[in-house]
Length: 217
Image: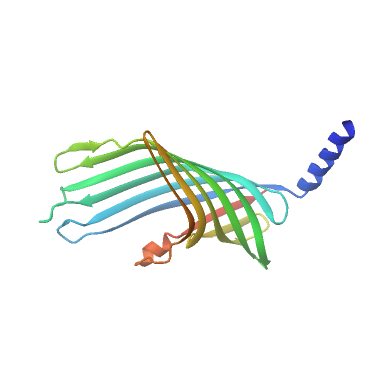
């Protein structure tokens, strides 16, 4: 038994001899919307913010494991008056706590560029969902809190600025995914190969990408 423990310890040491910690994450802040001068029905606006720090462990040259965690906030406003009025709208806002363990595998390396594939298991705790009617100054419905679970595999590109610092570009134009949502009395699910390449605007296409930052130590 003692020899077994020593053997396992040597194997673990061999696997992690060149390992190093990685700190980083993703930050996103944006606003998009469309309305005419009269704020007629169909006009809308969306504001979002995401802060996702990351702690990872580089097992070897090709494999990295870790976890992303953070907060996401969304606010939507839709104008409802056919004649146009800035004060007639419905709004919706929600905060979400996200936790996402991940596994990354480097597929191809060329100079400072690395093509990688990353699998994530994302758990989202969606809270404080509120719907507000500005016309009547009433809260329409306090939406149910719910939990979401997403399993996805997405490609990405890493660019090394130095031995310590690198940047990630995640491409969500195509992803292998399974998504589940659970709440009190209802649930949803979807899975398959998703392709998000039919966007009608440049802004929608840019939303298919995410930029990350890494510091190795």
